[in-house]
Length: 70
Image 1 (cartoon, one colour):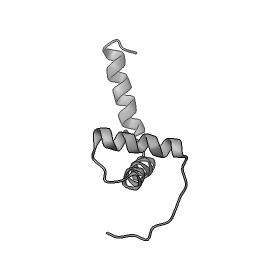
Image 2 (cartoon, one colour; image 1 turned 90 degrees about the vertical axis):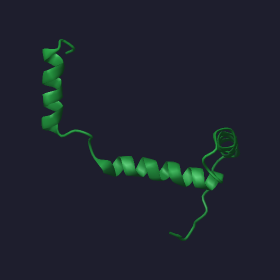
Image 3 (cartoon, one colour; image 1 turned 60 degrees about the vertical axis):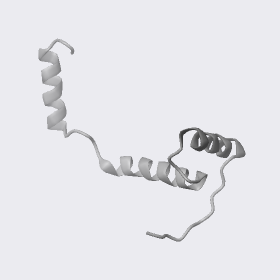
């Protein structure tokens, strides 16, 4: 999937840290690819919603109380 690209600016310090990370750990072909991945991860967490419903959370708390953790 090819999308239209836009330009953003980050500090040279952050750019260099990302570049060093990529060179050390691999997994990305460019700083731009890394940044796009990280942003997509953060945005997907924002839209994912809570991990547990209120009802599930209460059940977990009850179990933890019964086990003496709360």
